Image 1: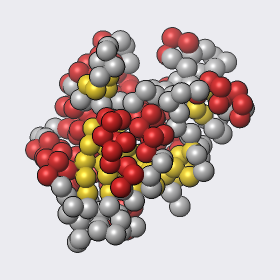
Image 2: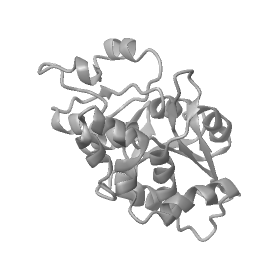
Image 3: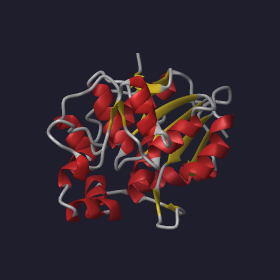
Length: 239
């Protein structure tokens, strides 16, 4: 099969080395935030560890938690706040899920990040570049969340995002494995994916914490044509 699907960092480490391209999906909110940043012309390095040290060493700007943001340092990971803040040339967006997977997938082939905002643009680029064929196998990874013990917490929003990309792939030689075929089904069957995003567990949590605007940004389906590709250690808009 030429298109495979997995969830979380363990499956990413298994699938990425055999793939010519890995697509990482972390809808709420690493991959959506990377897309927002890249649209503004910034480059975003993926980091799981040593993010603070890397920011100091390279004079980059480290995104902080919502509660730590100030007027002088407004850069945080959530996409709504990142969109509103002045865009630094090289923000570091540490994330235990999407960023970690993207960093680990870099040991294989190309790495692209996708969200609901750019699902069609990503699918077009993958198809145009011949990914998802026998010569250029493709792996799509839904990041998921973490339970308190560190184990994988499957996330509906990431499954929807991965399915949105998988269902849009249109190469004549694309052959999905059974897992990828199954992963495309929830997106195709969703009567109202925006409502599903707002109503899923992490979406409801953001509402409860007072950040519905972050869900609204990530629900902007096909609003972006930017395709962030990992080049020289940072995500940049594909040329």
